[in-house]
Amino acid sequence: MTAPSDLDAQTPGPATASAPLSAAGSAPASFVVNVPALADDELEVEPLDPAQIVSGEPVVTGKVLWESPDGRQIRGIWQITPGVVTDTEANELFVVVSGRATIAVEGGPVLEVGPGDACVLREGDRTQWTVHETLRKAYHISL
Image (cartoon, rainbow, N blue to C red):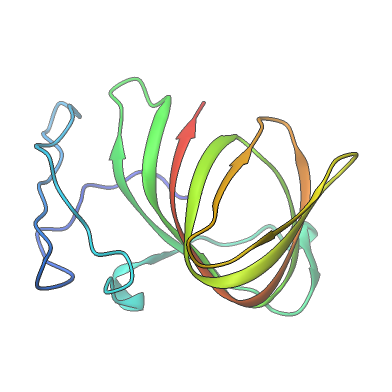
């Protein structure tokens, strides 16, 4: 995941209002982001470690929308194009907005996720993501 950034002052969709983080990093005013309407060019490239790529040429992009002052809570948007990658997970709750993937948890379940699915991954889970269709999710990570 890339370094956290402030929420752009741009409005991604007509039903969207946003508020930037303060200089001190405190929580922004309440806000809404239309996740499907957020243009791809508003997401920042998050380079994958080549050792994580099992097959294909997946590209990861994202946007941090909020980070707690201590850096232990992060909320944002994340997207990955088709391919197969491995990862070691943080404590995360996410909701798939679009796309489909199969997430195989080492020593655990195989999770099929698609639009509308909420998923919880435990810190330390070693996973293999097979992304069938470009997947976009809204997430909350606790470190």
